[in-house]
Amino acid sequence: MRLIFEKNVEGRRGFKMQSPDVPPAKKLDAKYLRKDPPNIPNISELDVVRHYTNLSRLNYSVDTNFYPLGSCTMKYNPKFTETLANLDGFTAVHPLLPQLSGGGALAQGALEVLYNTKKILCEITGMAGFTSQPLAGAHGELTGVMLIAAYHKHNGSRRKYIIVPDSSHGTNPASAAIAGYQVIVIPTDKDGYMDMAEFKNSLSDEVAAVMLTCPDTLGIFNPRIKEIADLAHGVGALMYYDGANLNAILGKCRPGDLGFDVIHINLHKTFATPHGGGGPGSGPVGVCEKLTDFLPIPRIVKRPDGTLALDYHRFKSIGYIAPFYGNFGVILKAYAYILLLGKKGLIEASENAVLGANYCRTKLRGYYDIPFDRICMHECVLSASKQIKNGVHALDIAKYLIDKGYHPPTIYFPLIVKESIMIEPTETESKETLDRFIDTMIEIARLAESDPDVIKNAPITRPVKRLDETKAAREPDLRWKNSIKSK
Ligand SMILES: *Cc1c(COP(=O)(O)O)cnc(C)c1O
Figure 1: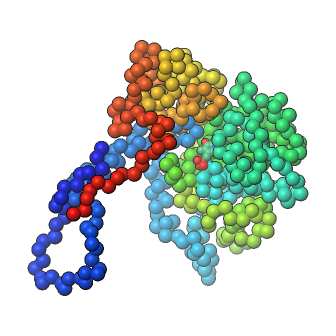
Figure 2: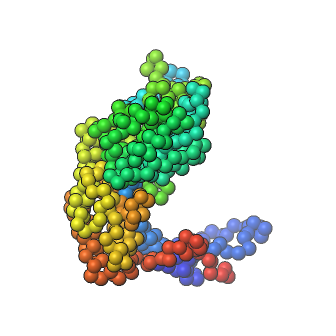
């Protein structure tokens, strides 16, 4: 595709004014006039429209096709929640509006959304309190680890370590390290669970917390969580639940009941906000009773007269984590989505997410190696290890899927599976869509045997063909060098 500047034709105009039928005004003083003409392309209106329309059609999104990107929960989000979040009553509310003005309250509606969402999240997760401030999942993790640090500090307990299994999401050790802890990584045993012997060896009264991604990045829910929690609590450590992918367990179990003390949720993955490409997120953090005092300010509280207010006077609080109340629009969409689905709908969402992943896993068994081939949760992890003997790697399979019109699944993650291909169908995809995708994956497995070069040369149908990945990373050429000389 050519850049719009390359479509420049001297003298071409999108819009031409008629000659004036009144005398022209006095010329502007020369000192106000620019020396060079603006460097914008000369192009007709129709060409502008076509240029941007065609560009937008190169964009891949959930609205165009299946997006099985593991761990990212790229599901369809109903347009209804977008419409709600666009209502003037919400978009026109300024965060500094007086909460209570005379008898009438100007921000009570927005506060009610925050308050009700908090209450619902407490109910879904079994936690005692929530903050909606964190702006993404990783930000929620950092907040959660800071809460853990504040708790231990308050109790006069000096602790240095956070335990993280190697099947955790990469943001877990990163958040622990940014919050000042040293990370102890526990390997995965041959069954795909955190190695219990190693775990027990690593536990001591210097451990501040155990951070578990649940389900982990293998898509597996560890059945020994209660035992792990008891052991951790036994040495005074806290239990952290990475609930970014809460869509795997909605209405099935509650982290609070399993013994977790801190949890973050990705509203943008579980509860209806289009995300990706750095789009807005929200990573609310929930805590058990003994940690509520440390939650960020402001806390949202109900006054005796039933009105809502923001409480900034919490001396044990870790303070601000983000301006105001977080990404309000995302919280609002999550609230609307939860009310839309209701209790039964949320349970069904989880059931469908898990069903879809297991459907893909069992249908692709036999064509791909499945390192931990057992009932998984919302995502399944395959490996291209069978295909390597023909020189076909996970990367090649991902590229070939692009030619077939799919967004590639997550590849080479989790790191503990060689040549991993992580597929997350999400609850919103139909059986027909999954069947088409599965057929394509089977076709790829066959091609890897019969004609591997076809896969290795993909993609051939896209404007950008196979890149030199190393060069693209080391010497990125992202700038268009302006070749139009101003006349
Ligand atoms: C996506 C994800 C995160 C990080 O969330 P962001 O909003 O991208 O910061 C953390 N943990 C898990 C398990 C995830 O899937």
